[in-house]
Length: 320
Image (tube, rainbow, N blue to C red; front, side, top):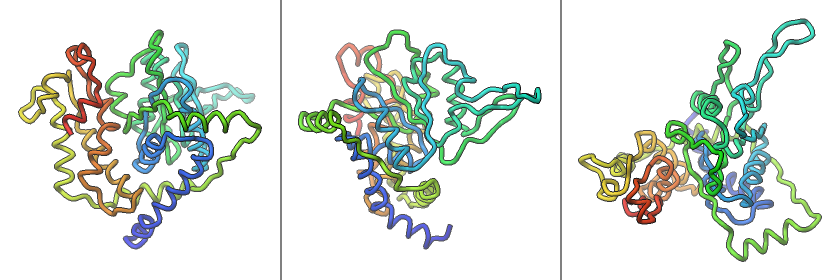
């Protein structure tokens, strides 16, 4: 791709993204921050974890995204008896008495991992390889997953009985932890009015797989000033307790802080914000905007913080 093509893609990106968000708005009322973060996740070739109580349209949001992008979509309902082969696929004997591999639901462009913390670690690990390597090992073979490929997982933060907490290694694979909150009163009225009639708005594709790949390639070409990169690294390093450059908040309230992948995620997320706004190059303000979603699942607060009723987002805000 030439420099002129990249510039043309970057210039057209804000309008393309605006059209995409307009399609999502046909069925999703409010939740602007969640929609923006999912758009950023797609631009950055990252995976996202959506955390929210039941009834906030997490699943509807993800299915609407797949329709607006015109991509292959599959849903995996995670349960305690789910096996790795239920995700990756399995070999079956055909009429010619030959073993043929039947691909599992992970072989799609967008995979909805619904209630991901309800399945045991062995099955979570099967998804982990797919997320990190974008490949699947099964039946003695390694197979590439479709491109583009995104895992958008959901998790209920309230009901923890019978769940298996995601290991830190898998949480770190998610670019963003997206918190979905209750809608405002006016938004909830609009939701009720829109969902209690016979009218069903249809989300239409407004991008192709190639459009997404082009946007992703152009995003990587966006230049970043050295001081912005240094700021992102400094911010992440301040979350690590017991270090020479750690923040007092981290020393007091964190069990451990974010790793180097968080620094990478901050910079690429800042690029996505700049692209969406047509601002050319990311700034420190973009780093600060992306920080909560990038850091909240990569930091563990200690018993002191929990005893004082402190929220990880508020602590991240103090460091920022």
